[in-house]
Length: 331
Figure (cartoon, rainbow, N blue to C red):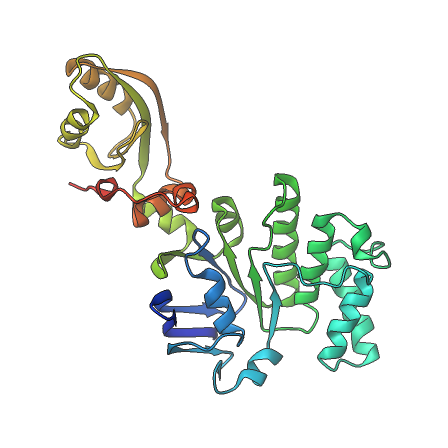
């Protein structure tokens, strides 16, 4: 498959603040590529550079072979964009919004009618298109914006936090509709999100981005596998007053413990040969004066991968908590 997005050393500074810091990535045809990271990580700034709304400070980016700085008009002809902030005219109906967008791209009347029919079906909006947007639920209005993003047969569609503010059911419904639209239209999709489940469910590959840098890029499954094969999460009670750090130091020395991912309580261990390790851990804790209060064994998820690569969870990053250096301690 051809590369539809090629980014090399892309950087954006606002004075002394570095919003995007020398990032590199490639997006292939028909691929859903996701940026996973907290608010402020640089996701939306990257999108704005790629869709020609911001000039990079340095580095380069090409969309379908066109340079975003030197050939912005050619870039815009090949992309569809769904902004994080709602941008439809709520006084107009859904159909009128779609028609207006198509007119801006100089589609003929016949082309407009054909495409409107297609995207209404793709996003399950048939029968809702002649209602003013301000009379429709938020989730439906958002689906019209996603439909608009596919209106002009774009080679690449940019979705900036497409389901922010949605409830679980509405979010999952839109995920399925985005997948369906991508398959039917043949477009590549670049998605930004801070929802772990969204990146895992939708994306063929994910770039973990934090503090303006891309930390890792791979498929969701490979990112999860990079953490390990089995994780044990548990809470302990200190019966002898030795302190949690004492327990952590001891548990790191166990030959079957690969790493300690989380050193708070609950503690998360990446272990070898997970079967049978829970009894071993309970026995070990008891021997050094600690009591296991709760324990769970599971396979790694994408949240664990984010923690593994960045040293903090998405929730902590959203809350502005300081990363703990010790969290990625390895043997």
